[in-house]
Amino acid sequence: FRRYKRFASGGAGLIWFEATAIVKEGRGNPRQLIISGETLNDLKRLLKDTLKVSEELYGADRKPYTVLQLTHSGRYCRQDSEFRPIIASKNIYLDSKLPDTYRLITDDDIEKLEDRLVDAAEMAGEAGFDAVDLKSCHYYLGSELLSAHTREGRYGGSLENRARFILEVLAEVRRRVGDDFPISLRVSAEEAIKNGYLVEDIQKLAPAFVQAGADILHASIGTHGS
View (cartoon, rainbow, N blue to C red):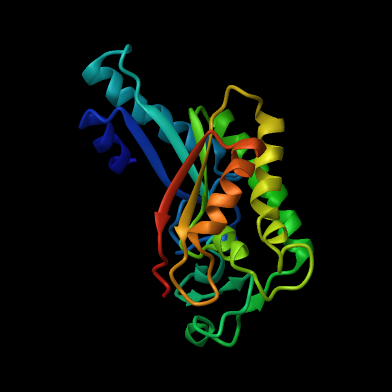
């Protein structure tokens, strides 16, 4: 609460709220924000208190634009003091850093996370945020699925399959929230590790992302895990 009140007091016109986990087990650290039925009222209060500070200092006509970023940390999941990675695709260059307890997420579990991510986006709108950002970069779950060259099933192999998770989520969020709630998609333009994906893949997919519902493509490069 103190952090975002300070952002508002500084006069920010755009406040991009930090990566917020869509499920408890998808957090990157045990204190990461999470959006759920249990936390929704607290997120509403966080947003309300943040906007109140801005209004008191700068007037009601200067309301900051607010975006909530949604995430699943995938192979970087951590609960308590232990890593509990959930990976989408095996990678010999990264898996050596993982504990023996890691597991490969199933297609069924990915489908459930699609539903959970859509629910979270809808809740973000209900909480009062102006837009939502779907975090699919830096080898977190959405990004790793784009690199799932060796994965079998509906979410691996071909570029079409590797993009399925993002495209299906975008389309369903757009259907659920309507046309007046902007959707941002944050992707790594290139995952600069072996067995990753290249900027050419994102160039091919960008029109499909927009057609599926993305209003903003928010790009960076690389992964902290390389």
